[in-house]
Image (cartoon, rainbow, N blue to C red; front, side):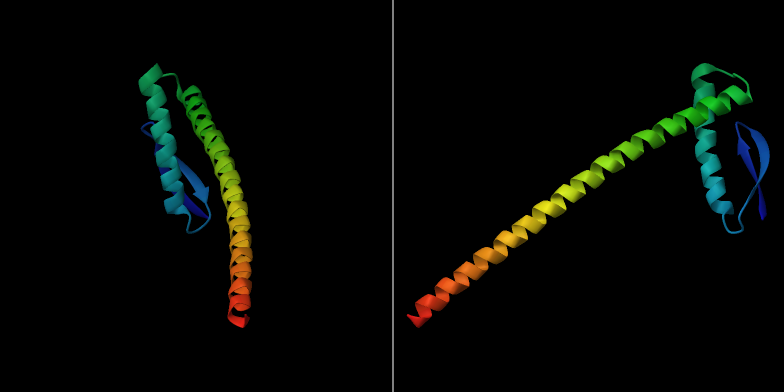
Length: 108
């Protein structure tokens, strides 16, 4: 298990992670630090626990909104796939009907 020192609101914290996940953990910490710093900027210095709680709640709110958007987009993709399948079925039927008419005309 790897040990990584991250910085949140100007303070270092050493945390463990799976080997190879250090860069990912640093990126997550950078995102969280940005949230905490924004809360601190907006509300003033509240103490680490309260800043961390508010920062985590803001990130959870973003995650909640993104999950909602993802679900809506997945629904739209499913609807479009159904529309495409119906259109393809209609197109095949129209081509088959046209081919039959052409064959009748050719035969006479």
